Image (cartoon, rainbow over all chains, first blue to last red; front, side, top):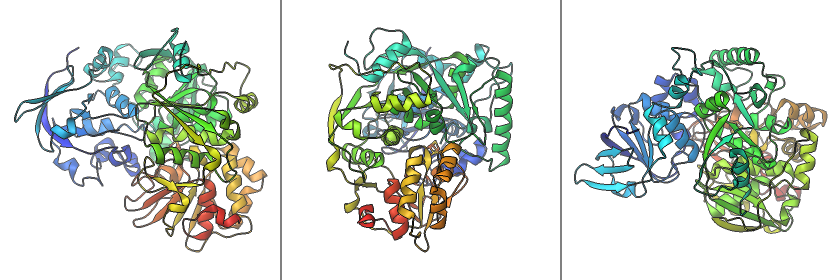
Length: 178
Length: 415
Ligand code: SF4
């Protein structure tokens, strides 16, 4: 399955950004809309208001260490269309994919893409292009079945298609763990 | 054959002869655990599930319900359990932190695959189980289909040598690993070596639990005699342990001389490359001390806390919160007199729940406060205000620090 080319502004973060930075414990008591206002609440206060639909979050090594809290849902709530990192924590990676948010590993990305750069991301090819000068980096291609999950909008949509959910229920299960 | 423990278990689970790092495998899952939080928001009742025998539901993170949202989650969990005839339901009263409940009830067995949404599911690696957290959607999918996929990561092997000193616990061993070698992102961790015999099961559980803190995929131990005798008390007879092959391929091999270790402390924010021997850590004044969580709310942890506190007092101006990892641990600790000793010393012994560990519904920190915790995580903001500082250490070090009112080497207290 091919996923359409994404173009947006990059927000660049450092190494080992943990899930409590993106989905703090107190926000677990709030609705998704409210909780989304607290993404990076301490690391970059005001970010959730500045981020625009179509933007792409870029991070360094070990992105998303921590909980199974569905941070991807909050990013989607804010209109973020993809995550790119030098390296993902594997649980965080799986959560993103399963919520239908592309997560692409591209080594060297934080050295090339700067905060606020316009970038074009080809999820299927795992490549990112800095729009200003067409500099392109290649990353690690996702297996076809993973692209398929993302392309279908996440694993719940797939399960609904396979009849595991009652008709009309597109709900996504909850907040994961701590 | 040249496979690590994890490679062998994943080969077994996927019906393959051989798997190696880099392979993507689809496995049957032996046991899946759902937790209370999953029912508390946006729960969608499935039309069918793969196998009620391979499912457990544990009320743990927020019990008894601290909010209507959590209470409604309980209502949904109970309805789900009734509808699908799930016998392994650990409702409030027989509850505990899911990873403790898994251990106590023999839900983790050698050579099997265990999944749960929660990131500390790797705890069951102590029992020679391939266990890890996979997030709420993946676990929902496993509940429906009975299967999941793994990309097999390379494995880092730790060989333990020598004998563990009494004052050194699993937490210290782990903090030494994290402080010395940093994170293990997209790697598995495997333990072995003759020194393992001196590391009791509770300490192995602490270490396996904390694998998530160095971002490891699976953290597993072999099923040696100690492990098998623990399992005999908690499981049926279907034990098929898995050993690493002598020529298994590792991404790295590291040796830890246990007899040379001392208590370790992680400084606030993370554990990887951020932990030091206690003798090198600043003696910060502390406001709150916490002993609990899936890593260190075990009976042995409460025993250590009680031993330190007996005949002593929690320092003025300091709060010591002790949270048993399960109702069973709580009951055992009452019977053993630990709860009385702790309460007499001015500690607060709470109901079993995740509680203070994740800054959700009790024992939160205010701005400017300093905490030393024996729980799993010291991320900024983890236990409340992002302007609080969280140090991490063993129950022994935390209990001693509660008495001293500052971070201390616990050996000073017993000396
Ligand atoms: S005790 Fe802490 S780390 Fe363990 S499952 Fe609960 S919240 Fe997570």
